[in-house]
Image 1 (cartoon, rainbow, N blue to C red):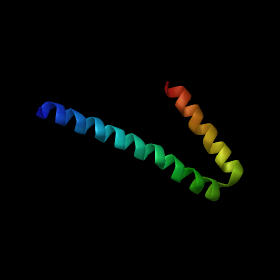
Image 2: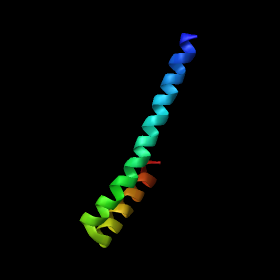
Image 3: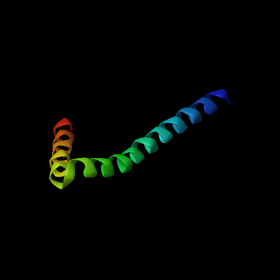
Image 4: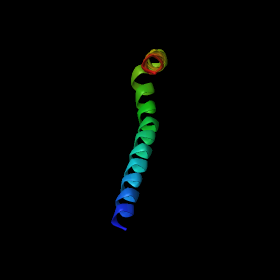
Length: 56
């Protein structure tokens, strides 16, 4: 029974971590748009997309 409990705790931890990282994007985007402006945010978004495509 303890193996199942440990497994469930680890799955829950991974789920909570993924949720936190997903919400981090919602908080981070408004901060970027106000500090960088529209053109700066567009450049930043293109760089991020290019990096994600190159790494796959």
